[in-house]
View 1 (tube, rainbow, N blue to C red):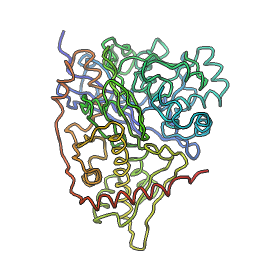
View 2: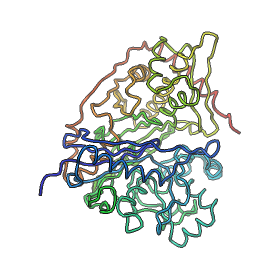
View 3: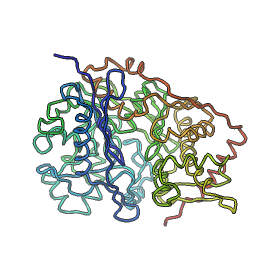
View 4: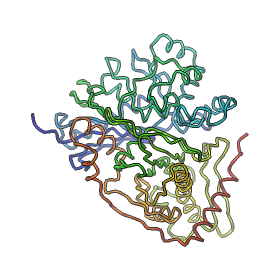
Length: 505
């Protein structure tokens, strides 16, 4: 039997879907990408068409193989990585979604979360789930759907409804859909539902009862990298052949894996639609006292789960998109960097992008976005710089919380994601944190992590030591800012954040 040449990764993000093939060196051999629609039914609501996402995934696979003349027989296995918390309910008999997917950014469940917090506070379920009560997570979204649509609730009771985050939805469709598709998820995605017990890695019956969710709609929880395949791609699907599906990681966990953060104390920050900083804390969960999330980092086969602390920033790259599309000050995202570079500093302008509240470490759904410090001197260059700096200020807040929770003094940070192309952003990140910032050669670490998980499961790569050998540096940034200036900047940022709180009743 000829040696397989590639491992495939479906990388399904908030704004687009990609299919990428990686070779034995962990280099990209082929890819195709398609954007999908963002649906905003009303203020604070964000939806996606799950069927559009599946169709785009299938098309990405077909185009990747076609454009590069690659045969399905050359692919060893498939991994999936995905936007997390985004919630899909569908009819298991037809495969048709019963409602648009409710996206992680959506805030419609705020009343549910407030009601639940009345009896025990924001961290009522932290010891069970590792999570604060927030609109971010899937459990309250499922509860909202079942309460809002009695026909869905009735169908769920009859056993005809399936729930999944996007990984589950795609794997089910890839492996046959209504004709025997695998209904699975992994501990990283399950840990973001507010329904999984963080220590047992199983669905928590107490949480299901509190949220009124029937267990029969939930997928099986399987390892993130599983030698026993979840299923095989359907022969009548986009591959036209049977390929084992063996890897599944939420996008930020996949980036942790792709950045080879396999040792406790290693951390990465991904700059995408949002901004997500994860710290490997080893095989025992650390419960945060400083507003962070305790989550599963990854689980390889029968090995114990590796946990992580995470700080989640809701708006990062999405802020640049807003600056481009809503304000029209720039016509393409990279232009913001050129604009910001025209001034030496922010001119006293600060931008708090609390468009749907603030995530870590505040968890305040009553906050809203603001630009403050405007004077006659302020130009669009200062606002552009404030937009970029907002991402780095938020990351520093998380970085400090991580050091307090873990007791680890972090001296360096691995970075990835589209925004790392901005040298100005990365230099300011290094300056404001006072640490070395390192970008790897392969920037597509999310897809790479999913490929690594899938490839490890089938022996395409032997072990994590081999994966570490593939990791190499593209560029590094060292802090240059004087301490006094750094702290003055950060103090002003914290002041701006306080002004954004309590805007919504």
